[in-house]
View 1 (tube, rainbow, N blue to C red):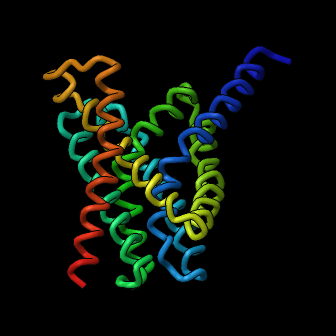
View 2: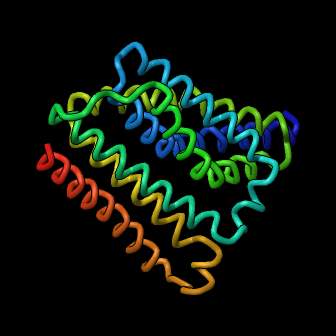
View 3: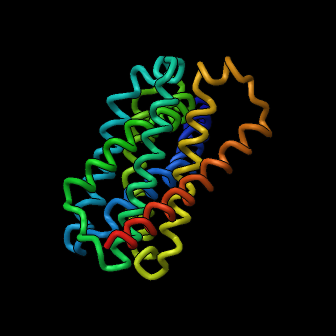
Length: 225
């Protein structure tokens, strides 16, 4: 077998692993956003959310590296992820207490869209770097993420129905992602020069902060009813 074919196979395998590892964050957002939908709309919401995620990645691929180095972009994106995590968490808590109606399909898609715009850049760079400039490999990696995200989102949303604690775990994961984006923003990183240990501590604090704020706002909502 020619050498280039062996390398291509290795790149394909690497892209599959990357998609498996990076599908999780997007799947958490989609699963939490569609959790309160009716079951018929939930499948449609997951499909639209996954398609939007891939379409955004294709559109952002051509200037992903520049976005990563643009000051304030990751900081703002991290704050948006925080807001979405807390909003979805409080909505889920209100729904469990019977004080909140289900999201509409399009409001769920809106959450997914905003979250994915802010979360896709790292994923794009990982796949783009592995594809080494090969457009077919890049398309393969981006397209392959659709079934991974759909499957994981469907599984997570079902688990969240049975075990509400998973909603809180999902919110904590998004809090970690948001904190990671903010601490690695070029402006923040240049000002603070955080060590690896500090970055990990900030991510843990972000996860705890989202859960704490979500719990506080949900309890206030219950008292107001």
